[in-house]
Image (tube, rainbow, N blue to C red; front, side, top):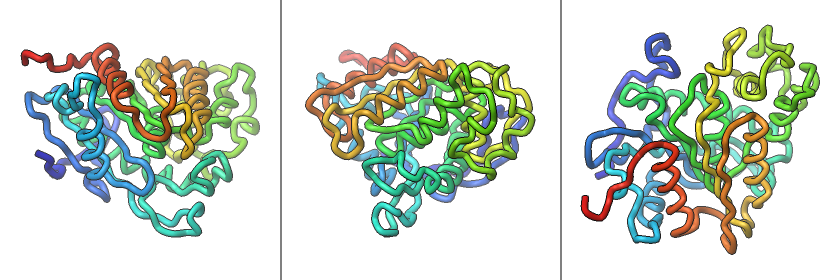
Length: 318
């Protein structure tokens, strides 16, 4: 039975050193585990939706080739579905819709990306608060983050800014915000702050501190510094690879004929993460548009959870 979040003091990153971050503005919709709680999966919805709707759709229609749902197969998982606030959207002539951040063009999120930054920053803080709740219940390697569409984009932005590995990331029909700028930062020949800050303006420079010399860092660290700068988050002075989310397994899937968010955006996201040395399993779903493909993509998610996250699905005899 779905229940609202309970009232807990959240934290982010190291639970022994990070202060309380308060309560989220929008409490997430939560499906409590049916068995002993072993893992938490946090999934972010697409634009013009909310956590309750996304949870119902995914956990009802998202069935495997054997006809099983994700919550049935993983009874020890706590399913967390945050909801984005309603905000004015440039793409819809400033009409207010539920979105993690503003966009100028829903079909091409690479246009005028500066409009996305405010929402990215505020949504990131909301997500850190929600993750803090869950990190009081399970270890970071037992947490999976993901989403669909813009929710996938938000999840990838969070991933690159984390100061530790998590259990995994699952993205459906998504993209990576500031993907080109990230690739410029993580390229081996990136050598100056002016190059690395192509679209990230002065508001993010302060978070970089003394890290302007990027050439001494490997790609995962460069990506981490760039992302925390983009999200206006404070960074440690000289982060190491162990202080990033490097090593977190990622599963991305995209429909080949997606007319809402072109397949190329998902493919480019996977390539950009690969440039930052993340191991990405990218799936192309033929004859499929936007959203998850049933049952193929659900089968792939189950296999990813089993093989990469380490959650054994329930068998027929269980």
